[in-house]
Amino acid sequence: MVEIKKIQAEETYPIRHHILRPHQPFDACKYETDHRETTFHIGAFIEKKCPS
Image (tube, rainbow, N blue to C red; front, side, top):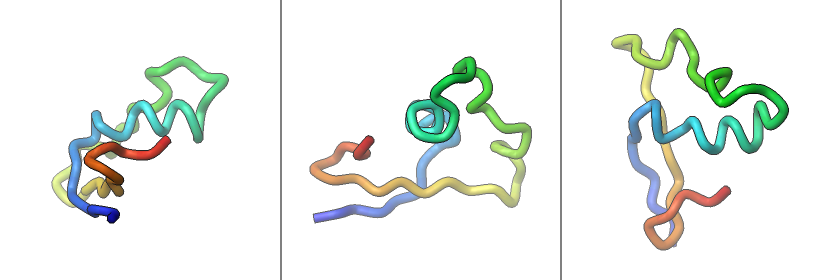
């Protein structure tokens, strides 16, 4: 079963790094817009873990 829930920006960094920016420094995964009032992040969890 997959659970979809709202997550914090920091929880996106590992998968952003692994999938979107694997050859860049980890800090490249931290976006200027991550903490704007209108920004939100969603995670999909299988067995309480986010797949990578």
